Structures are given as C-alpha cells and as structure tokens.
Length: 501
Image (cartoon, rainbow, N blue to C red; front, top):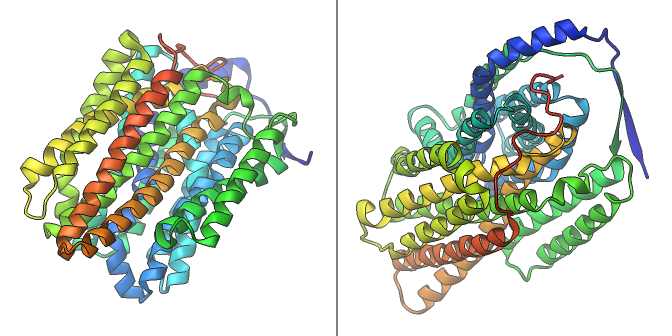
C-alpha cells in the first residue's frame, strides 16, 4: 500500500516541568479557548448559507448565468465534503493547533479572494478554496474542544455551546448574509470571514501553547484518494440530481462511482497499518449512531433554510434581512434546548433518549410547516414550527456531537471529529438533492392541475416538508435502535488537554 511519510521538524522537547506549567496555564484559559473555537466553528457553518442570500446581488454584479449560479454554492460543498476525512487525519498526525491555524489563514485568504472577485471563475475558485481550508479547520476545532475539556460537567457545557453553534450557524448565515447584502455589499458576505479568522487566529496563538513533537507520521495515500474521490462523486452526483434529475446519465455515473470508491475505501482501511479512518472509530455503536443522527439532521434541517426562505421571500415578500430575523426564534429555542440537554438531561437519561427524542420532535416541528398557504401568517403557520424544530435539533446536535467523540483515543480525535462534519455535509447534500427533486416534481404536477404559480410553489414546499418530516422520523427509529443506553465515557482515553502542537 502507498504510504506517505511526513517528517516533523525536530525541536528541543519541553521538559516535564515546563510542559506542566504550560498545561496549567492553558487549562486556566479553557473557556477563552472555547470562545475562540466557537468563532471558527460559526464561520465555517454559516458559510454554507451566507452566500445563498448574497447570490442574486453577486450574479448581477459579475454577470453570470442562472446555470452557473449553483456552482457558487456547490463548489464549497464539494471541496468541504470530500476533504473532511483527510483534514481530520492531518489534524491527528500533524497537530491540531498547527492544522487549525493553517486552516484559518487559508480560509481568510480564500474569503478575501472571493470578496475581491471580478468574474465568476475567481468567485467559484475562492469558494472551492474555502471548502479546502474549511476541511482542515472544522475537525481540528472539534478535536481541540474534545481534548481541552475532560471534566464531564465542563465538557457537557462546552459541547452544548458548540453544538448550538453547529445547529444555528445556517440560520445565522442567512441573517448575516441578508444584513451585509442589504446595508453594505454582497462582497462583505465573503470579507466578513477575514474578521472571524483574525480573531480566532489571535486567540489560538495567545491561548494554546505550541509543544514540540519529534518523529515521523504516515498517511495512507490510497485511502485518502479513494475516500476523497468517493465523497466528491457522492456530493456531485446528488448536486446533479437536484438540477438534472435522477435519471440523468452523469448523475447515475457519479453515484455509482461513489458507491464503488467508498466500498474500496472501506476494504483498504482494514489492510493498512495507518488507516485514514481506523475501523475502531466506527465500530462503536454509540459513535456510529451519533454520526447517523447528524446525517439525518443535516438532511432534514437544510430543507428549512432553503424552502422556508423561498416561502418567506417569494410568497410573503420578505426582504433578505427580514427573512434572517424570522429564523431567530428557532435559533433561540435551539440554544436554550442544547444547554438544558447537555447540562441537565444528558447525564440523567443518556444520549440515546435525548437524540432519539430530538429527532422525533424535529419530525413533529417539520410537519408543522405543512400547513403553509399563500396568504398564511408568520405567527400561526411559521413560528410554531420554528420553535418546535429548534427544540428538536437542540436535543440532537449537542448530545450527538459529544457522543461522537467521547471515549475515542486521543490519536483519533481529529478523524472522529471530521466524521461529524462529514455526516452533516453529506446529509445536507443528499437532503437538498432529494427534497429539491421532490419539490420540483410537485410544482410541475400542481401547475398541470391548474393551480396558480404561487399556489403550486407553496404546495411544492409543503411536499418537501412532509418528506423532511419523514427523514427525521426514520432517523429517530434507526438511531434509537443503534445508540446504547447509559452515560457516555467521561473523557477521551489518553486525552491531553493542552498538547495542541
């Protein structure tokens, strides 16, 4: 098997006394570390939606077609989704602190390039580069959080905050994108990341010590190529399905290729000494169930951001900024529920009960949107669903994220964290493609039955929400079967809170 050996620069190792001093200082600043990691996490998650609101203005300014427009979103998803496992493994092998800082600098540079773009090609290139560096940044942030907080109560609180950011980032992206586009320019939807990255970079440099490592690490090249190509084919195949249909030859070809490549990757991981994704990471039922919970939540959740945004703007006439504000009740419900779930309920009832209940509540919240009508009111037809859905996702995300990385060996913290981000990204891509196709078919059908364009649009959204509700319901059954009852491991085995190299 092909293996790349990466020598790490030799340096004078820290003495035990100095290492303990660094550990004590970093531990005292752990809540500031959480704030810094939260800024970076928010930047990555909101970037999946912030350009959605800014796209019409960007399209007008740069003069690209409706067909090209989707690539501004797809380029980010393709790079981010396909490279996450590699980013997670590099975080383990080269160091979480180093990988995190490289990701921040690269993400900021790509964002500056996109903000200054004078043509479509430059903008798409910048979005792809954001995805590349985001794939380094996201798993490094979560693995740093995992190894920084080892006390059970403190870890629960930290993951509640981090999980809330993961769940609300998309809605915050809509709000921020709308505000920046309305009051400044679409370019600031890209430039704003430079400010986020600068704050996070300065915080990490100041708060997390750099401890030397000596030796060599190995990276499985065949596994890296197989999983990256497989995930790229999967995300691209579903993106083509959304625009060209499931029977399109290119769609079918890429989806078949993704299955073959991911199957080959699974086989390779059992035959190499240093696998990119060690089977031991996935074999635990609680970890596997948590990954699936994030997958199902990503598939269903992004339907809200997409179709409810369409409904509010196209049917109700909301502006971009008002649309973002409309999602704030969901954000509030999610944040409060995530805190209660992780700080109060998790240690009492366990992840299985919370995550399963959260998926079931999310299914109920999504079904609330099936009452939407052309002349509907926000207070009666939109707000109740947002509040219930926010509570449901709050019950899922924080406990699932903590369960996904609890008990994993410290050497695998990065790749375990990367799988959380990968599942959310793949789930979002699959959900958007599936629900987008269902909505398009419903729209055509209702137009053919004599409905007005507006009525047909609303009916297509309602159909998508029914399907999204079903996704959450199926997720509740599957995850409830897989997750084990009882409390999570108190800390990752061999966790080293401040060995952030």
